[in-house]
Length: 64
Image (cartoon, rainbow, N blue to C red; front, side, top):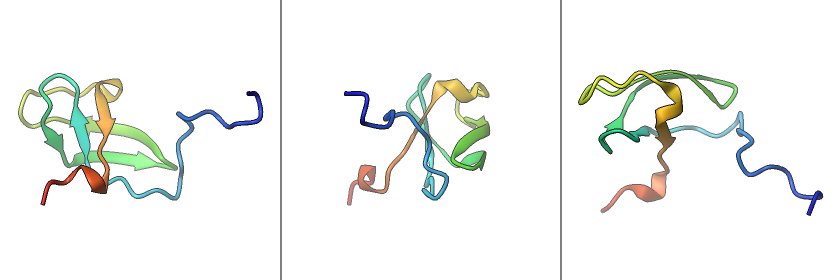
């Protein structure tokens, strides 16, 4: 099992469409990234600014 790379490793080429605030569940579009890492984020709904309290949203999460 040591052959697999860690699943939490950021992909620097991946475009992040939005973040999801873990505190209130709101999609957040105010954030900055560098090399796949979230540097800054802001939830305009609840004011959360802790980058560890956000999940990365996916294009597939959009309901259509």
